[in-house]
Length: 572
Ligand code: WTA
Image 1: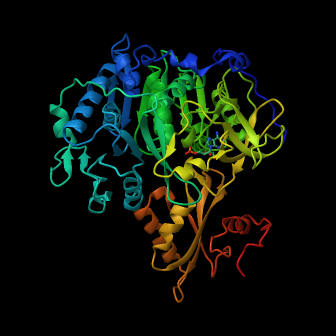
Image 2 (image 1 turned 180 degrees about the vertical axis):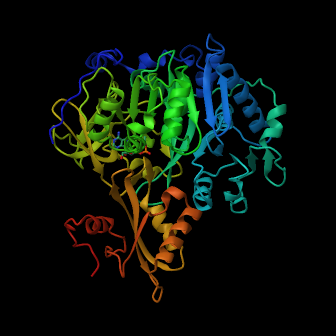
């Protein structure tokens, strides 16, 4: 398919020349933006909040929050005060120390931001958990990381199996009228009384900050460990790629349970001293267009699934909304279809800028800069300071237009530093100790633009969320009626992919529609709503290797009516 290039528009901001930056830029330059460059005292929460609160930005809005009938505004000064109070609560009501793991498990709310920033101020390692997780998923993550504390809400607290987590000492519950018993501490009660002064724990650039659990194609979800140093790249990309300016209102629609919601829902923009919008609740066309208008959003970072839903709602949904505040739109998480880019041009007279990165990379890696001609269908070019290439399985760089592994030269600032408790897994990401291999396949054209082709493994991207088939298969096998289960991503025009499960039942069990629904509910209840298979197909037997591994690629071939390829390893 030949795609026309969309030039940088006049209405686009003027950005520094990309080629010049690539030639001249050094990450050392970017470090100068931080106070630790001079003081040597490192803490990301200080750089994101306190530094601004102690400057001319004290009374500037840091956070607008809207959800249902809550509509609140917090300045940088407020954010400093409340995250200090949270830090005092966490420290005084538990034995948490520097380096201990604490999880935040709650819907988007100002309290989530106070708690997360407060936890960073005491030097703890924060594990953000998406609110949709159910007991099994919560248990796996807290158990693997040996968590000492968790911050949650009355609605979610029952999903934490405290009895099975002996090292979990403290459960902070955010809400009114919380009864303190056992491990439960009322966050609000102590928050009210807590001092607004707090001496931040000073750390090193390599000290850990966040532990984001994410899925691969095999094994349980793995804990991706990030460090303070990530802030260097998060701020630099917030300037270059998000193009954040002093007067902007920035809206990142991602939940902090996912990496986009922390790296760019919290750190990038706050480090830049930008005003952020946080909207709670689920996606709705009316609420989203309404929020852009009400808060005068100028820079908008969302996902292809959301854009496709807005596109599907048509022009009628926009009527009556003044969206003229928008000046820059970006996308992440899944391939951005040229169709959506065209819709953006027609609808907003603006280019939607794709950005590619992963939980493991910690910040944006391959992007469409504002000053760059944009090729619809391409993710763009590497951020200056980042070296990307297409390599074969041995680590040899392939020439332009050849498909291969999308790889990154090891050693960028925001790179993960470990997989929790699993050094072998960590090492398995790297080829020849030189290339980080992403698990995505792609090619680069002769102009240096990268084009995403698909996952090399069986990881599923559904509505921009990364789901591992293994975790779902394991859960399905716990259902008494199921003997075998194989899970794949099935292409879907709106969600990118949907989850489809192939299931073999116990002898004598009737394959009914009711059973399908029961299985769906089972996964929903035990794992998470977004992990429940939308489609289920019963089979007498599933394709397996001789060693007993489900061959998902064969299931996918069946589903898509494709040739099944080499079946020599399949059992008879
Ligand atoms: C996919 C999300 C195509 C990719 C920040 C990657 C994308 C996985 C893009 C990481 C994009 C992310 N175009 N695919 N612009 N951005 N992906 O860890 O398969 O939740 O490996 O991080 O999302 O998902 P994760």
